[in-house]
Each structure stands twice: as C-alpha cells, then as structure tokens.
Amino acid sequence: MSAVLELRGVTKAYGERQVLRGIDLEVSEHEAVALIGASGSGKSTLLRCIDLLEEIDDGDVFLDGEVLTDPAVDPVAVRRRLGLVFQAYNLFPHLTALQNVVLGEMRAHGVGRAEAEERGRALLARFGLEGREDDRPDGLSGGQQQRVAIARAFSGKPRALLLDEVTSALDPELVGEVLAAVRDLKAEGLTMLIATHEMSFAREVADRVAFLHEGRILEQGPPGQILSSPEREETKRFLGRLLEAGRI
Amino acid sequence: MTETAATSDRRLEREAAKRRKERRGFAIAAVSTVVVLGGLAAWVLTSPGWPEVRETFFNWTVFKDSFPEVLEGFWLDVKLFVIVEIAVLAAGLVIALVRTSQAPALFPVRLLGVVFVDLFRGIPTILLVYLVGFGVPALQLTGLPTDPIVLGGIALGLSYSAYVAEVYRAGINSVHRGQRDAALAIGLSESQAMRFVILPQAVRRLAPPLLNDFVALQKDVALVSILGPAEAFRIAQIIQGENFNFTPLIAAALLYLAVTVPLARVVERMGGGAEGVVR
Figure (cartoon, rainbow over the protein chains, first blue to last red):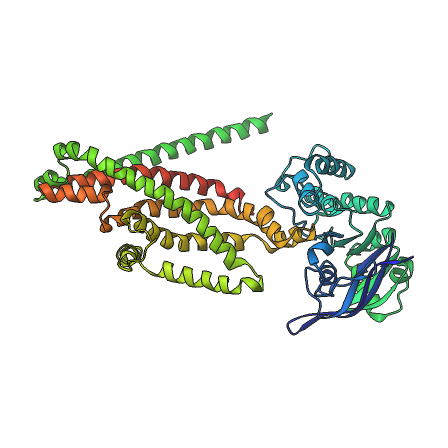
C-alpha cells in the first residue's frame, strides 16, 4: 500500500504557543485514520495545515509522494485534490444546498453546469437529501447541513477527505445521520483522516487510531488496541475522562 | 370540560383587557399629537414676525412662478446624483478590494488606498468642491476638464468614494472567516472566493448603509452650486436675490425632500428586512 498522505516532522506554532511539535503520520490508500485527543491537542490545526489553510513552520506534508508544503507549490491546486469538512459546516448561506455542492466543481474544476448539477443532485440524494436541493442552509437541520458539507467536500473527487470534528456541533440525535454518510464514503474506499470525539465511531470506521497529545502523536495502532488497551498513561487518562463523561 | 371552559373565560378576559389597553393607548397618542402639534403651530403662527415670514418664505404666487425654473435646475441635481453615485459605487468597491487584499505586490496600491480614504474622508466636502472646482482649472493644463459641473461631480465622487469604500470594507470584513476557509477548501482561488462567496454575502449587509450614503449624496449635490452651475439651489438663490423673497428656496427644499424621503423609506424597509442577513 502506498501512502496517499504523509506527514514528516510537522511543527506549527501560533506566536509563542507550540501547537504541533513534530508530527509523523501516514495515511495509506483506502485507509481511514482517526485522530483522537483532547480539545486543543492540535487535531484541527493538523487538518488545516494539510489543506494549506495554515502554513507549517517545519517538516513536510506529501500527497501521493509530492511535497505540498513547499513555497513553490500552488496551494489552490493542492486544495483541489483534497476535501475538508468543518466542525461548524461553513456552508455558504447565500446559496442553496445544490449550489453549495456545485460551486467548487464548476469554478475550481471547470465542470459544466448541467453535468455538475446532475452529479450534485446524485450526491445529495446519496446522503439522504433528495428534495432539499433548493433549500438554503438556514432552512436545514444541523445534520442536514453537515451532510451537504460532506457532499460539497466530496464533489471534487478528492484523493483524501479530511474531517474535522464533523459531529461536535450537532445535537445528539443528529449525529447518527452524519456518521452514516462518512461510513458510506468509507465503504467506497475513500482515504480519510478523521479528527473525532466519537470513540465508538472511530472503533467502527477507522482502520487505525492515532492519539494526539500536546502536539505529538503519542501512540497509534488498530482501534481495538488503542481504545481498549492503550500503552501510554496519557491515552488511558484521556479515555478515562471520556468514559466518565459517558462519551464511550 | 370545565377546565376548558375556565381557560377560555380567562382567555376572553385577557383579550378584552388587551383591547381596552390598545384603545387607551390609541386615544393617548391622538390627544398628545393634537396638543403638541397644535401648540407648536399656535406658537409659530402667533409669533410677532409670522405675517412677514409667511410673506417672504411661503408666498404662493412666488412659489408658483419660481417652481418651474427651480424644477428645471433640479434635473441637473438628479442627473449629477445618478452619474456620481454609479461612479462612487464602482470606485468605492475597487478601493475596498485593494485595501482588503493581502498580495504583497499590491502593497503600494494598498498604501495609496489608505491615503485616499484618509484624505478625502477627512476634508469637508464643501472644501473639496472649492479646491477641485477652482484649483484644477487654475492649473491651465490641457486635457483636464474645466466644466464646473464635471469638476463638482469629481469632487463629490472623491469624497463619497472614500466613505463608500469604508462601507464596503466593513461589509467584507463582517463575513465570517470560516466562509473564506470553506471557499478555499473547495479549491477556489482567493479572488474566486471573494467574488462567489464573500462579496455576495457582504453586499446584502451593505444595502442599508450604502443607501444611507445615497441620501447624503443626493443632498450634497447642492454643494456644486458654489461653482456656478444652474442647479436647483443656485436658481432658487438667484430668484431670491432678484425679488427678496425666500419662497424659491422652500421650493428647492421640497424637491430635495421629494427624492430623499422615499429613499429613506427604502433604507428603513431594507434595514427592517436585514435580520435574515445577519447570521
């Protein structure tokens, strides 16, 4: 298996605050890797750095073996090969669900309107949003909005999809429908890097779980191993806190 | 059953009380209006100078005679307003885009944008009209306009472009950062993100403050009169000078109101409908 995404020694600081302290991580083709860790451990920053929304300080990120984090690389071209789903959906409020999905296809990928809309409708239907094409985001529930956002990120046929806490802003009863959409993409073999607080979901969908603590990946391995019998004290404490909060 | 009956009794009681309160409120408002306006009118109409003021400011004959001339001048105001407004909308947008851009290559232009806004927003509009209207022809350079109407329009345009650029900039900055992130994440370039995602959202929020500036500009067009063009205020002044009667100025004022009041109502209606835009 070849690595679709590869991070080598990635560091990132905001001013004095060191957020990432040397991240090494690989995500292979068709693999789903779950990033777990406390709030503020650097999960979101890591995903934003991969999508070049943030500039890293040191190290490198590779996509299909090509370096992304070189000043000579055009970030727009890189982002066209990746998909990113945000915690707060970040749908475009002035556009309908369908327009949200086709904007990138038409303007970034040069697909014609008819073709883009046909594909967009099919994608929305696939995520259970048939009949919602012409609704604006404020007329949709949180779960529906996040599914539109997933369709939008997936519409550009990304090599890898980055998911940033996609269920954290949702009411509990809406979490399931969004996770179902992610499960669906996993079944298709999409390469994914998933920052999540949903341990049961990580266990189910991820091929590998990586525990991020204070800007470092402390341990990684199959979900059963990391979530059931972690080696590091920090991982045990983190999982223990989640257990107390009834989140596992 | 009894419970429902009791509830509806209470309900009828409440509704009756609400109606009584509404009627009382209406009566108080009506009486208060009559007293205040009546008192004000009595105060003015019984003032010692009223007969003379009525003669010099509200003379019907003078009004009738001067109105067509003033109206003719007013068309110049309207034309100037429309042309300057269109130019201002375009120039303001360009200045705002330059000021919000982050490209290093645009640094000098960005600096120029800052200077432009500081300069033309900081100088009183009437002073700008003087400086441009009398200063530019004094240079005696060929190719520069010498028509006072054009020069006055340029002065107004400079002043209002600076204001409107800041309105645009505030609107652009008010769009949440996550919108730019999402636009970039789907593969749009910075300029595409601005065009398809940020500007369309900003413009919706901008309509009320922009219309506000429209109203102000419509009035300030009268400032061009100091350069001599025969617009409404200027003509009214001339007639006033000829027969020592201020009624033509009232005619001009009414004409300005005929445009600015409807504009203001439009602003209010858009302001009222803006809550859907502020998310």
